[in-house]
Amino acid sequence: MPSKTEDLWWLFTRQTIKVTPRQSVLTAAMIMHRRNFRHLPVVDEKGRIMGMISAQDIIDSLNLVLSKPDIKTTEVIESLEIPVERIMVYNSICVEPGDGLAEITKKMTFHNLGGMPVINEQGVVHGIITLRDLVGLMGTSSDEIGVRVSEIMNPNVITIRQNEYLSTAVRLMSEHRIRRLPVMPEGNGSDAWIPKGILSNKDALGHVARFATKAPTDSGAALTWSVPTRFDVPISGFMTRDVMTVSQDDDIRVAASKMMIFGIGGLVVDDSPTGRVALVTERDLVRTLSRKKGTSVLMNALQYELEVEKAKTRASGGYGAGSHA
Image 1 (cartoon, helix red, strand yellow):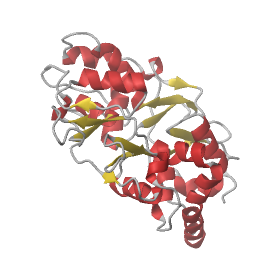
Image 2: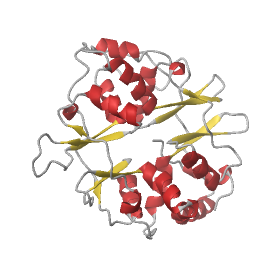
Image 3: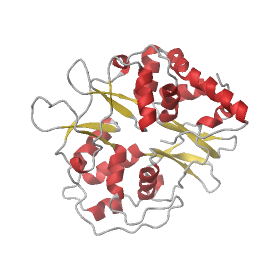
Image 4: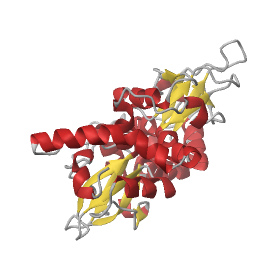
């Protein structure tokens, strides 16, 4: 297994998009939506790490303003024009030069993190590693891990009805610290527990993006906005309608492979034994797996692809880039 960060550069995003503490939360939200990211390092003028801002942080900020009745788009936009430093997480846990994959996964699982910036000895950000990077490793091999989806899935999922409004979805995400909500049909018919879609925190950020007539550049260029309308609308209008599924009897390698191929962070378990909605997520594939089966099982699940990639790297004499989710 790789013993230090230098051996893992191919796993990191080398040209990481960063923001400064004085850039607006709105700019960070637009970058996340446009680049399909959930985490952005916050750096000082020399590129040194100051903290992180995540989609969840922005959801928490949205929750505060959406608690007001009859909120207007202009009010929501103004509430997001505060500087990143107002809501960012300071003193974030980082991947440091001496860390190997075992230490990286230990930090990520122990602190329940979705991503960590990769820094050098001076604290300058060189990349980021996320749960999606680790799940991507797990999903590449065709060999079974020997753990079934049913062993790590979450059978007690918070759901939402398709006629509910965004404010309700944001409140649920904020209060329960979750990234996605299965969207259920109205009524109690035979399909009452078949999701009509999934609403993720990035879908919510996408709703913000709908009001922009000019997307921000990564350097934080000014935004111009269309004519304001009601912001709090039914989630059925912008939820993700393609629900990707997996069986409870599938090896978790199958779930990891589907997440990697489709670039998603969660799958609906379509044959949950309770008859209710169950999910398996990136966090389950890493943190829950480690907690229930032990770190050694997690490391073994990652080892095959690591050895293959190390061999490719040595043969080519260079490094590639990972995902940034």
